[in-house]
Image 1 (cartoon, rainbow, N blue to C red):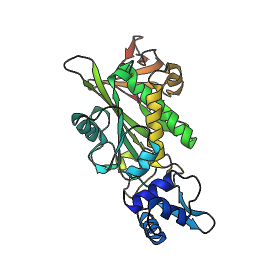
Image 2: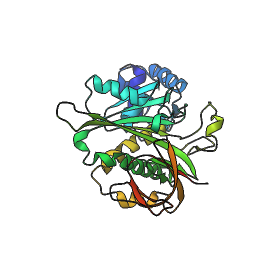
Image 3: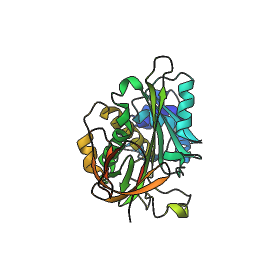
Image 4: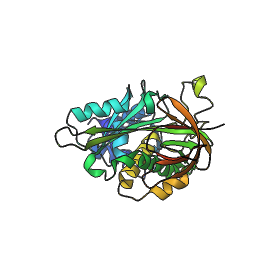
Length: 311
């Protein structure tokens, strides 16, 4: 590592300030080199305070970089400042032999994907990640998507205090609008059969960047911090999300999921195979299927499909 990288590594792991003389001794350089490297880090967006009594201290700043991500993550993590989608990047790494678990984080996506072939608006300022999990670590693959939505809700609430609710099956809402999208894809082991790996893609509308919200999304999406200045960094939130997902896999979580599913008791439209039908959402069963009742009294448990609230 060069002086700047070593300086960043030391400051990331130090809760208190570190004097210039100590830094110079640990890195093996001059104090002038420390000062120049600190200035270089500041140019990259890191907030570094310097004082005679406290030395050099890294203040919280929302800079995405591999050293910062490595500091927060306890699994391997790969960083892309910009990419088409983290799902695509994750699959490329799988094909190169990278073992699960690992995560891919992007500063922004140019082709972010949502469910049913939709695009996901992914400008600078959001959290965009894909988590790759070994199929051996997933006891119930059919419930991975619902587990992920609950885990992401827990992570957001733990770090921000913002309450989250879930629109079946996996969209996370705050204040009646979508704040998080989740897409889960599985890779099958063709030789042995069964799930080989799962890729969980997550997009969190954390705070606005320079790019304006498209007109068709203005009434549908919301940022966790619409005015900007999130007190939580993207690296912190991404790491917490991954930890929560990996931790929830062995849990019996359906009661908590059911309590967060805000469409229960509501009139909805069920969209399957291009056809929309009126229904009432009455329950989420133990397999995380949405139980609905149609106007003719027929009851169905939905394992897939799209539902929208009936206005």
